[in-house]
Image (tube, rainbow, N blue to C red; front, side, top):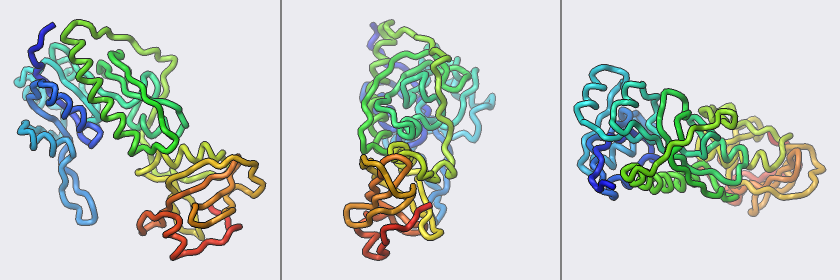
Length: 314
């Protein structure tokens, strides 16, 4: 086994990609450049804001590249000049061309937020929650030109807690991804990182989310609606209508019991939450947000807007 650090080009953008970069640096690998998306306008003032990965890279004194396109000869020449042993990709946000994937002598590996071949695509964390999976994980994989179709190198699983949201689960998976990444690199250096092809017959997809998917159908079970609410928190959020206004719902809990009221009926509204009838069982909601307002506990919300049991949501 060689202990020499690898020359690594790191490609990542959001907060999810930060722990893996920090893990590489703490492990002593030589990150020769960080490639991330261009700064984007954010907030009401539309101020240009750097991606989280850029902020960490600059703080560590690393060169940062923010190309408008990674499919140019100029960019490929620039990366080739860095002589990388390995490219590491974590939630970069763009599909890599074959010439770039195959450029390093050890190829390109990806930290993907699911147990492949399940949940290939852009939103694996969210869809695992929406589908009420009991566990998920991270797969270190070889990249190819397909959508998360490359061979699996090192998987790691974690349970999904009943109160996990897309935000909380992403934090757990990002930390796991960092640990698995450095372990995979150690195994690669030792020649003990076999590649296992994915079984395409078992593959499922995790396509990007859109706001329309957040509209709650109260005819579904409380379990299904709970998964939707948690999977879409913090974006794009699951919502229903309250007197014609959009009401986002958070912190759901399934309350077992045969719902005798029509689906969407508010059965109770007090400091304990909103108890709503569904197609199967009841849903207790702990936090809400009216469009244009702050996210509040139900207790705080009801102080300004009391709700009477019996009203229909949706």
